[in-house]
Length: 345
Image (cartoon, rainbow, N blue to C red; front, side, top):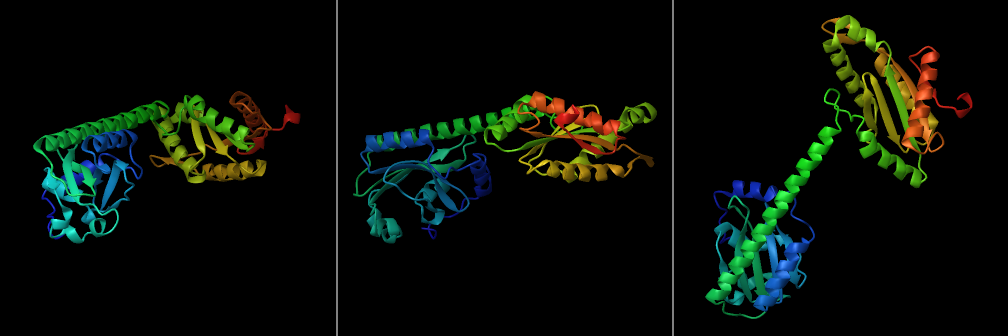
């Protein structure tokens, strides 16, 4: 088939339209599969499908009847429909000089008839085809051609709707994330405690796993703002955030609790020693001076540590106890970590 199909000049734009779907599903989409089943009944064929043609493959967005696997686009008749961007009807595949030797004609499922209509996105770019296939040759009347074109229009509308819903979902997630993000440090803000931390903590407790928390306070930060101004203080906080990121794991959750205070929630630490080890790396990272406009500024850390579920199975109790540990670290001279101990409370 590849010898007869010429890649259209707008193939780059067409592939951008395909990618805008953000997923040609490896399994059929339910709504499109229902539409394929309806078409199969209307046309009385053993197979109907909505296929998407990407750079290399024919992807099945919905199918009904026979179970057909995805294949190379060079093997797909739907590629013709997409590239020519028009209805294609082949009454007898065994009489087509190219397709008569195709595996799906000479071997199971031994198709003999094909009809396909372009499926387009809202920009008019053809991204796939609505096709029906039969195991017997047949004639396709003008009214049937019109019906297949209408099915393709409905499939196009469903794809556009799915794309819109996808983009709306992304936008909603972006807005939700923005609402939970501190604009200065790009860490979570306190609103993430409800939205992110509580769920992670509850899941850990329910599964019998540990869940650690470190509470960080930058020593002397208020004097930095008072002496150098808030702009310098903001630069120090941005650098502090970078140092925290350089130490934590990718699945650790950092929340800017306010001002110069941060909470780091640590999923599944093996024990308290793991929290101490992480704290020591943070302390070391903050012992180097911050350089702003050629001025060296020191802002070290005091850290409190606690471990759920032993030190609290709820966020409120865990934060209360880690705050008590932070107070112990400050009282002991700062620039250190203290682990919560119920006997000291």
